[in-house]
Image (cartoon, rainbow, N blue to C red; front, side):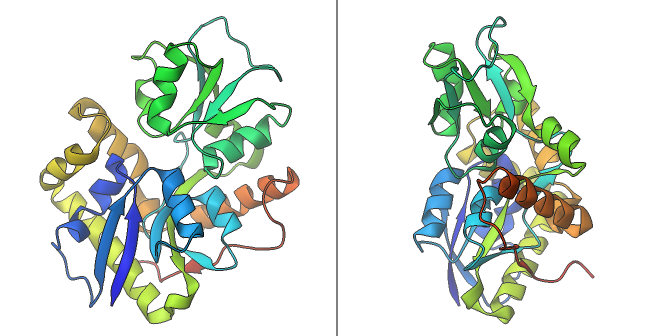
Length: 279
């Protein structure tokens, strides 16, 4: 069976999906046509029916819950991994009138910012890789960084205003659920189970053949320095990437509750988790 698969070009995804991209493991009778795009483009593509399976923001997953579920393998979540609110000037303070750049309307980063700062009205969106240059050029007061930005903002001369992930952790007591692998529910249980198992196998292969994945990571990464790549991979590819587990379920429930209470996420539509955990 041929599946349209979308992932991001970020090191955690290209690391985790390297073995699928290069057919280095048993694909369990599945074939994958793979596209790599920014996470907001993946969110949009899933909503438009362009993908059978794709990495997506968990904020988008809340919107797509009637038609899509979350595979247990492939997610990015944890403590100390959330988006950061930064500014170019150390004198900047967030106010309702501050201009804020976010990495897409359906990203978890934007959902967290809106939930934690409901009075902020001047939000605009850029591809995540354009936010740092825009801040340095004075095009906005503040910006929300994801991906490599968590590790490089100080090098880029930016000032941390708030760790939005830490704020979510303080409010909910749960790890931050950033993004996961969404799949169409109508693919059927057998295909969904096999896809989940293939992704879990690909992650295990990547850790067992770490050096082999580096050319794949470098081919697509925004940040090429190994001193950033490997800490990035280790930060976002964790035990929860192999399987969401109980912490993942708790994190998704907390995100949904926070989004519902802020009137941002749809109510009464829990996410369906797909596939079995590792045996």
